[in-house]
Image (cartoon, rainbow, N blue to C red; front, side, top):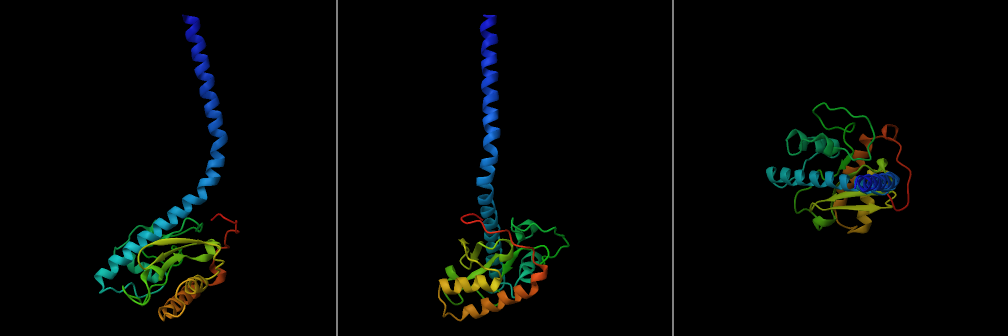
Length: 211
C-alpha cells in the first residue's frame, strides 16, 4: 500500500509539473494576442464614461455640452464633478509621464473633445456626430470615436495624423453637407493647434489588423 501511495504521488507531481510548464509556454502567446484587444476595450470604456458625463452635463446646462473644445472642455466635466477619475481621461496608448494638478489639460489627457458649441438634438442623426476620440498621434491606424448618442465605434486604417483628419473621415463617411461639420472641424483644428507637432509623442508603428 505504501508503495502505491508513493507511486501515485509521483505521478500527480509529474502531471502538475507538465501542466505548469505548458501554461508557462502558452502565457506569452495569450498575452500577445489579448493585450491589444484589452486596450481597445479600455479606451472604448473611457470614451463611454466621457459620453455619460457629457449627457449629465447637458441635462444641467439646458442641453448644451461643454462650450470649450479639447482638454478645456473635458476639464469642465472634471471641475463640475461630472467625471472625476483622472485615469478615464487617458487612453491606454498614451505612454507619457503625466501630472495631477486638479485640472485636466493637454499634458494629462489624451482624448480630443470636439462637441463644443453643440447641444442635444443639433444637426444630423446623433449617431453620426463625433464628440470625442483618441488623439490620432497616439496610434495612427486605430481610432475609437464617441458619438453624440453615446455609442463608441472603433475604426481601423483611418490613417489620420490630426484631429481634423478624423473629422474629415467621419464627414465623408456620413452626411458631408450638414452644417454641423463646420463646428466640428473648427473644434478639431483648435485641438490640433493646442497640441503642436513638436509636443506630440511619436505614434506607434502601424500593424495591419491590430491596434
